[in-house]
Figure 1 (spheres, rainbow, N blue to C red):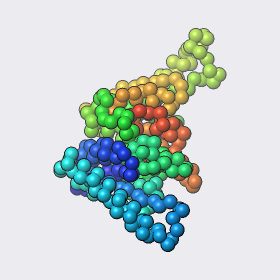
Figure 2 (cartoon, helix red, strand yellow):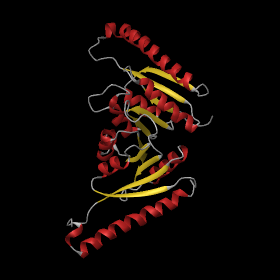
Figure 3 (cartoon, helix red, strand yellow):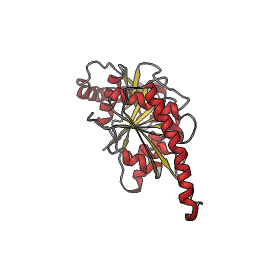
Figure 4 (cartoon, helix red, strand yellow):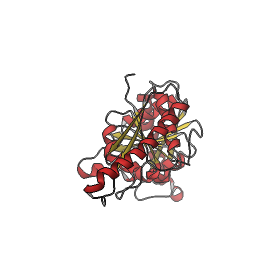
Length: 289
């Protein structure tokens, strides 16, 4: 097996079985092994004198948890190669580091895969730092394929071919229809459709330009996925709202997140973060150049 693993981050909270089983299905679809990762962090209030003893006890308890999750996966997917890792580390740092060799990182939405941290949920921070796509699943939400659609948000200004490529590949794996969603901004000044012929003509021009751009991008990638059918949805308004509404009941929503430098690399883009908070179903964040 020459592919990297699917890495799933788990914590000591309830509902972890659902996260690891979802990640296991993703690993099976990719013919990839599964790695269950768990980071143990001790509160800063622990002094050095008893930190070692306390840490040993915590580690032993967490080892039981991780082993139980491993057995859950092996019972459901006997042929899947499953490994686990348990270490003292910051969960964001651990998952960001493991993403360098992974094909996918899977987390529970809203920090449920790991406890929340002061600077934001682990899911948001990992999605902003990972070297591979991060799939954020909501425990208790859309737990699997709701219908046969994969939705991808495409931005004309910051277009990234790797996002569309990933979306096509996901639709192909799931034998799903691919819906490309694009948010349009009204020309400035913002005319309403009924204000006159010129305004309506300008709006049609904006829509036609967007369709032409997206058709070209589909042609560049779609030939490698002949079994995937493609549709377009143009919406006027905020990109996050457009993506969330387009992906209602979908199997997966795909969007990109541009790589940043310096301290900004620790942050996820505002649209991506808003979508992760609002969407009910699984969301994949693809790092882009």
